[in-house]
Image (cartoon, rainbow, N blue to C red; front, side, top):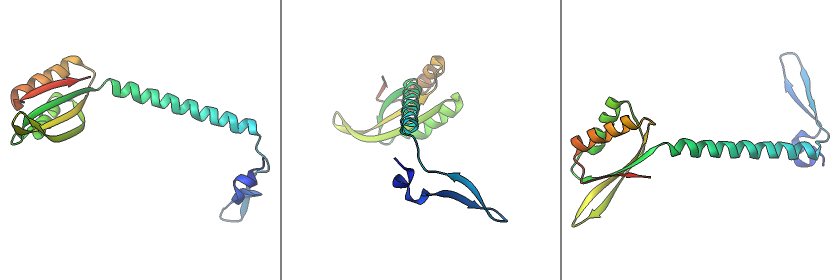
Length: 139
């Protein structure tokens, strides 16, 4: 299969302009199908590796759900506590939900930390300062 049928703009030569003149870069006539297949396999292996790496990285994050009153300023307090404890919070989501007879705020977030003592300290400090209706660790 000729490359000119796949990429017509690469039909004979690729060139670029320098200060003095055009310099010959690449002459492309035919690309063996074996090299295309090998490139594709290498590409798929790299993608598979990156997906597994991403899954492993997100598996270490602890997911937490808080239910607080609507008037409670929980998010600024959470961010302040996280800064004090040197912990990063990711993917903070808030939703109004019905809890019993009232509307409450459900806050879900991920704690990007592997140290269990730091996470427990953060959660204990948040439980005391925010006073949530419910706090749950989601796995």
